[in-house]
Length: 190
Image (cartoon, rainbow, N blue to C red; front, side, top):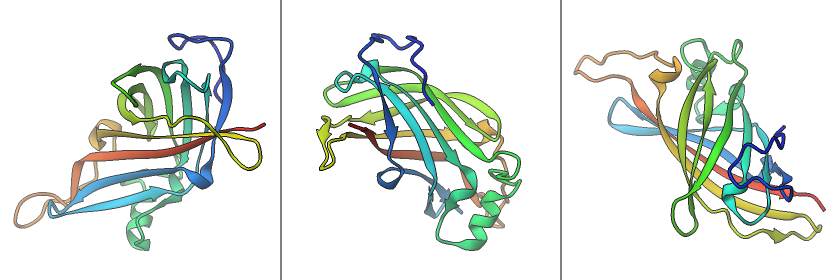
């Protein structure tokens, strides 16, 4: 749960808690396979919250948790391998987490979200390029909703995800660079 500690630039008393709506949000990744194609995956269980005034993105702070065992690439054997100690080690590290430290404007409808990403117990500073948030709208139940898309690229090696195999023709089975995309809808209940 995000706590309003007033550490975000422009933090104000008007910030309220917005929950990540898991039914309308997605945490996705893509990585090169054998240097010839891109494999995409999704984590099916995401939760978290944002403190936000509903208007100025720089006032927001966000925390998110993703269950590593919820990874799916639509291939059961690959999914089992990703959950193993070779990759996410879901038994020892059941979650991936992100906690923003600041958000900076980056042009109309865009921002840079800087924060700490933790994978396999290793925390590194990352910068997400954010599109949005959308203007907050009222849903049919009287709740306020807004959305944004955030993307970053990381080196999986930086987080201790280092399994690989060298191909006979050269190259490796799994690329090092991973693109992470978060499509997030947040809701503030009436």
